[in-house]
Length: 450
Ligand SMILES: Cc1ncc(COP(=O)(O)O)c(C=O)c1O
Image (cartoon, rainbow, N blue to C red; front, side):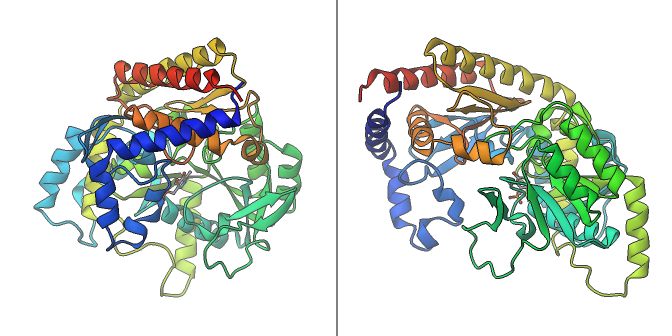
């Protein structure tokens, strides 16, 4: 049994240890008054440490801090660097492009090739580029409403698809509410965003049969509220109901690209009408893409022909700039290869097996979940079936104590939940170190009495 007092005591010990081990990072964060709250982006304060580690550099799956510590990096930029930090092919391509202009508002020859590479890798014929996955999702929602002439979209409780107003609706006690944490939200999202629980076939059928939903925007496996796996047959039912009701199915594969080559859709099926991929596709350079079927493309072209000239509300000035195109070209061509996935999935198997062994050894009421190279441990024995169940089993105090314990032993997990990513350059020794420290952490927690 892990007692609350043990968690609190560990947290207190680890905070002191962190402060002692990171004096330069501490000084930097105290000095950094130019930034609001000391950081250029407020998410950087979401780590479990009292102040963020200040990074010096990162290469492969290792991150170095200004305090001279070397971290085994399983956060990997919260997916942006899931294929390793600065892969040589990417670094070389970017260096070459840097001297040739960075943004032209014109297509490039490399871009022509990239379009074909995207189609080949993800199995959808037509693509567009945006600067972030959030922006891709916003664009896709707009397209879906334009194409179907329906105002509503359907999402799953507990989802996250980026800074996208339309998806910030939660279920609380079964009733939809605008997400309470939003800043400056004036528009009531409830009339146009339908939220249901993942894996609830009845609710899905009822919502889609109403015939007024433009699109379902979903991750094939929910990854932003811990992990919620699709029940057997659920995604196939979703696909069928969308087709039967004229609803466009959008899979946001920004995270589930970890499933395998071509993402979850190509690895496990079914295929969506529209797919979004962001973050890691640029290897850390801001860019994202959305792809769609020939049928959707034909309707988009028709819509474009029929609308008056003027702003579409889709895209921004830097979308598809030459640097982003170069980054994706290098990533798809030389980094996100089938061989890379073979290694990532083998490392994930090693981690999943090792975590399972720790859970068994200490008889913890925990489980491990993974979507290919994305692994999470969950401090509850029963895998959640939907967002509400996933939210209910989160134990922030315990998770934060474990995170900090591991950070102090130079193992970095993603700050937001217990996410660990395995890259093509993650070494077995790094996985073993994580497991060793995780085992030590659990043993320490269990040793302490109430
Ligand atoms: C599934 C999913 N889609 C989209 C996004 C948004 O990505 P970005 O913050 O790069 O716009 C995220 C971010 O975590 C995500 O998890």
